[in-house]
Image: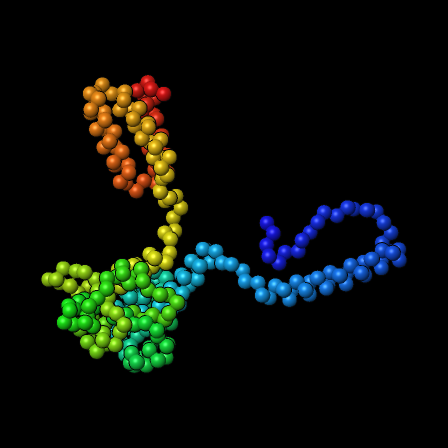
Length: 301
């Protein structure tokens, strides 16, 4: 396949000749000048060419922005172990920018609980205040997390759900997601200073989640919109594949010694199950093979 910038090459005839003859030398010299001139012209023209990016390039860029532009901020953590738990959860979803505001001393427990996320604790940025962090990193968008959602009389605590945040977050901007103290969470002032508030629906009798659990839910909703599930063979079956499965089932039911209305209801029920289910192409082929063998067993080919 020829790409932009590739030289056009034509077939050449191979001719025996005297390479030391004056005619050949003069011709070779002339061709070198011509080729050099074409290359120079080609370079000048190519400077203005913009190569169009495909969907894969856009996806890679979006995932890279997700990893580089999202900052996870733990405000005045009380227990070093929770820093490790948070780092581990970040590593699960490809996040790497951990920010600690006025944290306790990072004891070995923080690194132990981080397991494979130790590098995140090692590279964590530490600031005395949130304002210092905002100014240092030039944050564009701030998200507060809270377990206590507000109503119409507490506008700063009217939340979005994690799934809404995941669908609408702009990874081109630097975004800070704040998690508060284990005991008291974020203050009203810290929440009011943020652009939006995110809250996870929980049972009102005990609405507060452990930080790593809350972080996992939020990170998952962010991540699932940025990355395809890395397993092959999960493509949904096509209409034709489903049609073949239904035909084999029809043949089986048709061979049963039951009233016609029961055959019709049986096929309808099976069709409803197949159409409602998320059946993959591989599953359709497997099911089709089983039905074929049943037909053979019953003497119907």
